[in-house]
Structure formats: C-alpha cells, structure tokens
Picture 1 (spheres, rainbow, N blue to C red):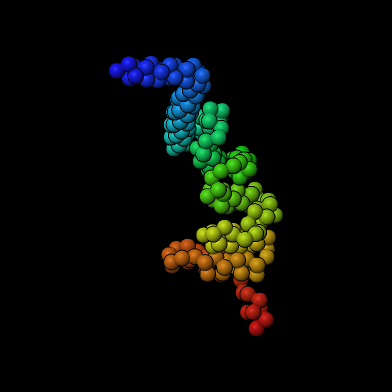
Picture 2 (picture 1 turned 135 degrees about the vertical axis):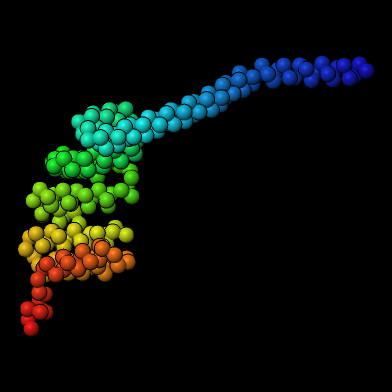
Length: 217
C-alpha cells in the first residue's frame, strides 16, 4: 500500500512538474488555435455578408434599370463598388449598367464601363461577351479600327460564329465586301442549327454583292 501511495505521489509530482514546464506553451497553443478557428469563422461570416450585400446591390440596380431610373442605377453601382469592390457582382452590375447606357444612347460611358470590366480581374467566362459588346459600341461610335482590333484574333471557344459575324459587319461598314462575305460565311459554318440567325447571316452575305468568283465570270 505504501508503495502504491508513493507511486501516486511521485506521479502527481511529475505531472505538476510537467505542467509547470510545458503548461504555458500548451495554453498559448490552445489560445492561438481557438483564436485561429474563431478568426477564420469570423472571416467566413464577413465573406458571406459581403456576398449578400453585393447581391442586394445587384438586385436593386436591376430593378432601377427595369424602371428606367438610370441615374439611380448609377448611384447604386457607385455604392456597390465602394462597399465590395472585389465582388464578382461589380462586373455583373457593370454589364447591366452599360447595357442601360447603350439603350439610352450614351455610348461613351458604356464603352468606358466595358473597358473597365475587361481590365478587371476574374469572371473570365464573361470576357468574350463583354468584348463583343464593346466592339458593337465602338462600331456604333464609328471607331471601326478599334472595334476590329478586339475581334481580330482567334475567337474564344464557343464564340467563333459571333466573332466572325462582328468582323463581317465591320468589314462591310469599311466597304471591304469580299472580306465581309468570307467572315459571314465563317459565321454560318460555325453556327449550330438553322433558325433565324442563319437566315440573317445569309441576308448579310447577299448584301455584300457578287463574290470575286462571280465577278470573274
């Protein structure tokens, strides 16, 4: 029995000594660990709140534009960029606002906003759509060279027909009928289905006049 008590006493002393030597480090480690967990959760909660806030701004901007309140939509977009500048909703809302500018005949701010979206980061999947829209705005402004430069390279996957159609429209506006014809034909060759789009492209081909082969004959 004495041996057992001695062992227990010795074990107790060893535990106290171990706690004295390492206890502070353990407690500090636990504090840091729990602090990291709570900090991460707080960061997650903040991110969720930011997403909800950005989504709310997006909805408001959309409603203002639907109501024809372009000035109010501008104000909400400015507030969105100030509140959550890195949110993907900034680009999405910018596209809505730029379309509102175009509908209102305000091409310069539309072009500026589309350029800002293209210069920004993220949302790579939207870049082809924004590029095409900017090209159309530049075309409407009469800046055909700048518009052509946007679609002169290889088209992104899935956008070959749209890229070619814009090149065709720009070439036709510049009086380059044969180049326009080839571009429209490329668009037809890469479009899926029949439908009205194919018929429209065929009308555009017809509008270019006789081709070089027909001229030669």
